[in-house]
Amino acid sequence: MTDSYCIYNGHLVSLYEPSITFNNRAFRYGDALFETIRFCNNQIMFLADHISRLKLSMTILRMNLPAEFTNDNFHNLIINLIKSNGHAPNARIRLTVFRNNGGHYTPQTNDISFLIETELIQGVYELNQKGIWADIFADIKKPINKLSNIKSGNALIYVMAGISKKSMNLDECFLINENGTVCESISSNIFVVKNGALFTPKLIDGCVDGVMRKQVIKLASENKILSFENPITMYTLSTADEVFLTNSIKGIQWVGQFKDRFYTNKTAHFFIDKLINLTQ
Image (tube, rainbow, N blue to C red; front, top):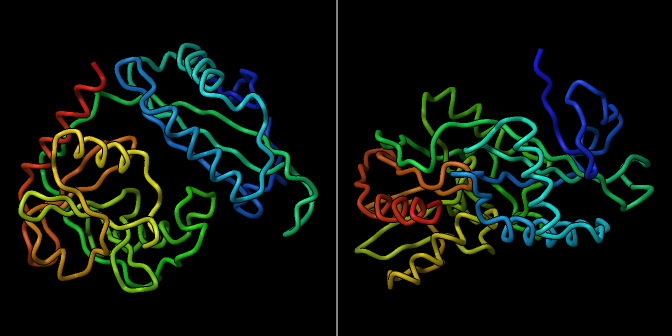
């Protein structure tokens, strides 16, 4: 059997060697953060933005920030792991940070451990040929607080939305916040296109502070496309020309149908082409 590897606290270890114990705080309390990062055409995409978000999130959770948490160090660790696993030229990277063992709800320490994993995937960013069929997940509203924007180990609301999506035979579900407006989807930020302009929820609406969301807003500015951060309501979705979703792994995915509304994908094509250019 061919060995596979991960990086645990800066060291290359076999996946078959037990490194994380059953009493780790990520497992027991969801006391963890994670980043999913795209390796595309032998490039780590937007690494600086991922590490910046990770550091900010660690500060919010009062985790101690090690001196070795630098862009250069993570770049070298990831490249080493990609080579060791033979996962070039395209891969999915997961970087998890969790508070060290000890204590119950109240931790004994704020020191952390980190784990890097890679998974081979095919191809670069590619727009979905068939539009996504989406509807609202309304059973649980996402709270709005300073934890809303981070990618934490507590993903139960997304798990429940995923179960609902499956039961309704949908491709995706939109989450609503405690104010009743749409904040994101199960694994992506949401953009609406109306009369050539982009609209996306504000961070204070409770969406994850997505790295790909940031890139789309930046690309829109560079290409003189108006973009606005506004609450997304049912009326916004029912009158939109386009709706597309963004995340670090898939890039951009266009929504074809929401309830009785059908959408086009011209703007989504434009942005996916811009993303592909960044990988070359």
